[in-house]
Length: 289
Image 1: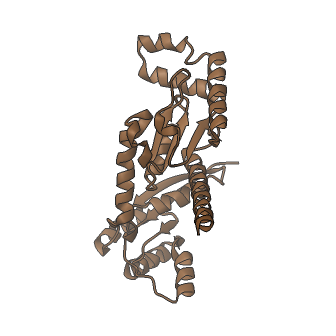
Image 2: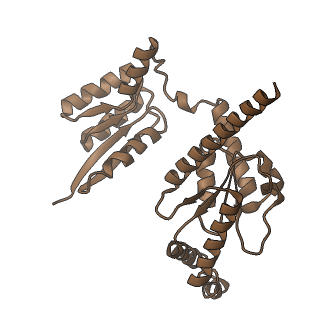
Image 3: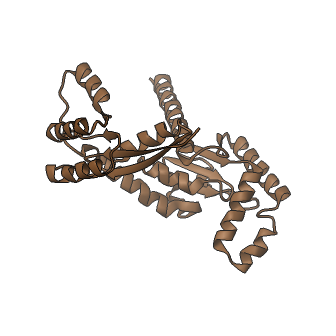
């Protein structure tokens, strides 16, 4: 079956991340489709919209829109109708549901999800936290974490921590190294501790790729040592899993998970931990009253 190439215009009055996520989630379901994306972000005036319409006329294709301004939407709809191109306003159904349920009209103000509010500053604070506490740094600050990720070297702790930070979650991460004692803060942690692990061969491949990227003579020597030796890596992963089990720390296998999927599981475990803490507090209060 031949591959279809499709111009797809993504028109947003904000950053366009919502549309990007929708496109990623849907186009992967079509094996014979190649998307040529045309991204039009921060479209908030008629002058800016006219650039979009010129681009649409030059390279026609379906349109996904997250515009909320009624006048801009109307002009985009008319242009697409003239070109015979479909346009989908991706927020409409969800907006309609809320309006019907709440009995309140949507404000229709562009970019409101990116205002400098408490959530925004929480995300910035979380990113600063990850930078300061990456790879076991500043261990005294672990008590401030919302979650601590542990795992052997190259088990995706850092990228997962940064993804969580973008969700406003302060994630510390600490490497597990045989023979190296855990930090004192993990003896009685004030937040959930979650282990990350992966297949032996997957870890070896990641480590070898890392060494090739660094590309030094010392790393070439390192490559022949325990860092990528299959027997040593197998023993290292088994030791780390047993350590987590002995502490009652849940472990996520990230071998076939994206960073987004790993982070989603971490968030579920954080929520479950907080719910247990809440119920335990209620039980303690009931016992003392």
